[in-house]
Image (cartoon, rainbow, N blue to C red; front, side):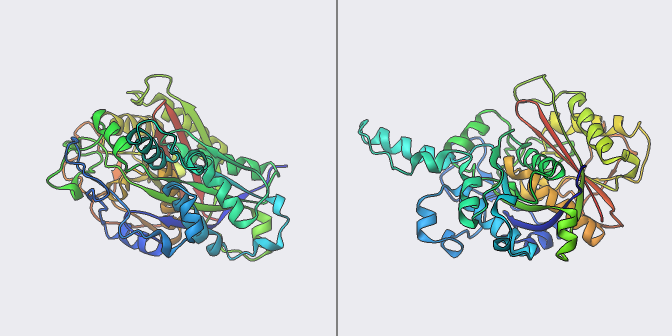
Length: 414
């Protein structure tokens, strides 16, 4: 017997809001989180800006002990998961702790810790000055471990890594485990803290990021003919996935149901998506098949669209093929134009956007796109500039990552 899986709690820590209400308000207002980097001097790189968390003070959320023993990506995970757990309205202490799990994603893990510790070692002339917290702060699975430790959850616990598809992979795994009856509740999502000199410098050297240094707020412009790369972001998104009957029995508020999820690989290039979107197309079709629907049933697609010249078009080609090159009720938007690209946390944040879009019957806009790429078919309904008020019963979220990873999740109203 397969169990139904619903979302009963959400939490967000983003460049345009440190909680879900603020984040959602700014998404609908078309607020960009991009600005010149403050954390370090980026002036020697090709790109000087990113979507940093604004006014982030760890001590406002976490104890001194937790701050000392965690990297920034784990701190983000703890904060967002705290929000989602509270939002779920359930006393987890009343459950068998082995029925509650954590499946969390991070593409890079503790990059900031790695840089700080290795730099300190080099400047110390090779003397062993490593902190005893170096390895625990560095490893990518520590976010899921710390969420478990913080709350006493003793069920399934691990971390997914699939580059920018990471948190969709985590959501898909959580969905599958609950469907199979291996857990009642799973805390899932993703966190990323990549705005560090080495990580940022590496992406800059790849020429993957926008260089619109004179006007960062308009730099992320998905589908625009003048797009020139993505804008890096940071933060975390958390979701509580719960077995449907369990949620109904306790009278939980249900944001939506996960009905389909899929992953494929492009097997094409280390960093570029397949130019014809073949892997993306197959992943979307498989997710829809599992949900028992077709693309004609989908009201909203939150695209991966990072504002790269090749990536945006390959995704559009996949969507066009999926629709049979026909006009449908499907509306599309690219919210990375506001949040920046949160890498391994992107899917979790965009899943929350899909759920709130269903709740409020509104599709958020794509901002900064003033001149659509002429190769984009005119029958595609891309929401530009302003949010669109319209019923949303089915939403789909696309994520694609370096290494050719494609991760798709489908949500439906209950």
